[in-house]
Length: 355
Image (cartoon, rainbow, N blue to C red; front, side, top):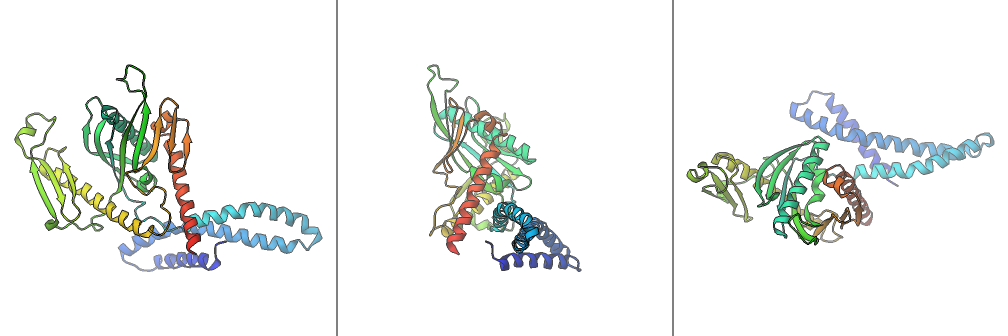
């Protein structure tokens, strides 16, 4: 049972925020308070529902002594004994510490892994899956760079996903995705296994990551690949090395050096931010079990098996026999919701161990 004093602290904070909003505060403070009030409102509504149910149960128990009211009291107790655990659970989930990056936009990177042309085709399938899923969520996908495969798909593709809370739902997609299917180029009908890696990076604000000019080595060179005469005459491609971390980002998709540098810095900032987040997470989790969706890209997280029409997420042992629906984006939400639920259960259990 959630302690009453913990619930009271949330209710008191809600009243304090609401009271301050009604006073004369600077615009920046007003915006911050409005955001906090918006986040607290559904929590307070859930707490009030829980408090009402607790009070209702206490009143029903006192009514048992009244012969005329006993039958009604027992009926009310039965109803509340079913409702209370769910209400408690809902409030516990809402009171879990929030990931500060959940509301951030995302830098989505998909790269072909082992498997040659088939891996590039699969990387293309994954990127289209995320594009469709983003459209269903009302998010915007803006391409940053792409390196097409020889027969289709992508060797690498990077995009920005923006909207309401994309990182909260996409962060568990980071890792190695494996596909098992008969390639279109395979005449013998043999099933091949190939892979692609997905990285989901929360996009930091400018103030989150301060990059000093002295920490950067910037190289410019002529872009290669498609682009006509332009690519042979202008040193528009940019490679930026962040010396303290060794992170390297190259960008050549834009025609101007200035735009390529801006894009490269955007990706670099996201990678540095994520590396720091992972370092902090590793320190926090050093003395307990690893959490679902740790972002370890060395592990296989999911298998897409075409002959069996199934998708299996190995972290939570969930299998869905609707591969086409998942790849179309429509079925992906069921898997993502299951991953989020598992993560919440892990964190609730960890809080219980720490209590």
